Image (cartoon, rainbow, N blue to C red):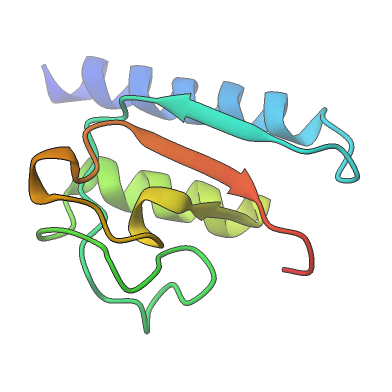
Length: 100
């Protein structure tokens, strides 16, 4: 079971990475989606990816998401700005931040 699901997830992140790479860096890029990811609170591990307002413990999907964001120089905006707890990281907004 995990082999099939894990392969699909890996393929998804590879395709997403390719799509992100195809966008010129000078363009503004926002990626919106429900990644079913908890990225955790450890900003020291991912300083340009996760802000001070990460939520929960990092799960496997969160690990995949922060790795993708780190490779693509994306920031998870939901973890940068403080939100009411009922809205915290339900869907993720990823963005290229100028100067990162």
